[in-house]
Image (cartoon, rainbow, N blue to C red; front, side, top):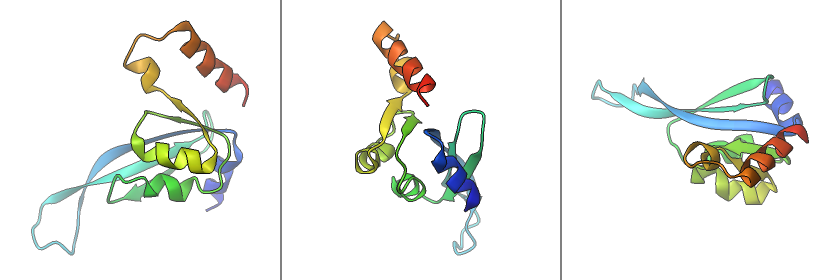
Length: 116
């Protein structure tokens, strides 16, 4: 809980989620199931991992509740709904990684990084 508060105090959070395979004891079949490990962190600082069975936006909504600042994400819609609710300024890295960046995009991202 203390580490979550430390991350939320920062003005800039990078967030992402990735798949992990897990076994669920309540399942009679002994096969792996896909779950998600959500990462929330400050650049060069504290990082918190949160485990969830699903990829729904609830993980981000729960962790980022009350946060007001810049949120760098990959464009996954699970963050977008909450971003408007939290009054978070969203910087999508997909704008740079999937298409050639425009000068305006690069300047916006760099400005956001240095304003924190």
